[in-house]
Image (cartoon, rainbow, N blue to C red):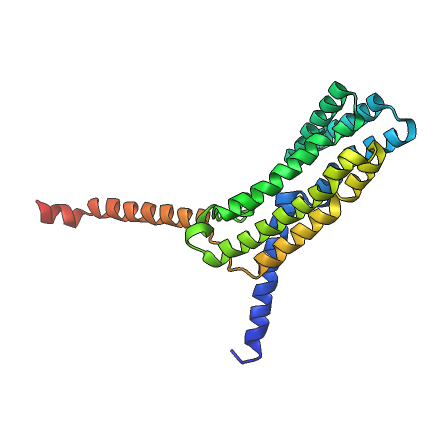
Length: 251
């Protein structure tokens, strides 16, 4: 290997690690399609309410499109976790708004969820178990190995969780005052505008931190290798027990 070959191989390895990290993040957070499913019901609600100020029609339209998105995923036999989370969020918003008669309450469950999630990122990081690691650990097939066996990766997860927590709490700092002071359409359009950019910023920072972190430890591969070794050892012992010469020596 020449001195010129080594940087090329290291660059290729780094590119591969970044590609794996990017694919895992897309899987965990739903990618472009997941973002569309997150934004569309709220966008439809605020658009219809801006036009006719009718809470019932706006709520029904938002819930209907959320259900259609789930149905499309079911027909395509695709994962439905992101679409289902959207349905539940819209359903709670519809229930709140219908119960109070205040259209702004359609957004309240989602805002409270964002606040709780932001606090969860901060608290779990302070507790030494950053939430983003709990979310992405199974995706990277490392489970919780990063806690005790991969300190560099744990540090990256902690940085990413801080980023998520602060971004979400910053978003709440904008939205909750608007909930009290702005009207429904103003709050709704600001909410739609703040759906994607903070999310993309948090995902990008997570990608940056993890791309520079040590590679994940594939605990599933380790368990499979251990099971294979045990099977081979058992097979070798069984073969030895069946050897005629050994039986004659024992006799």
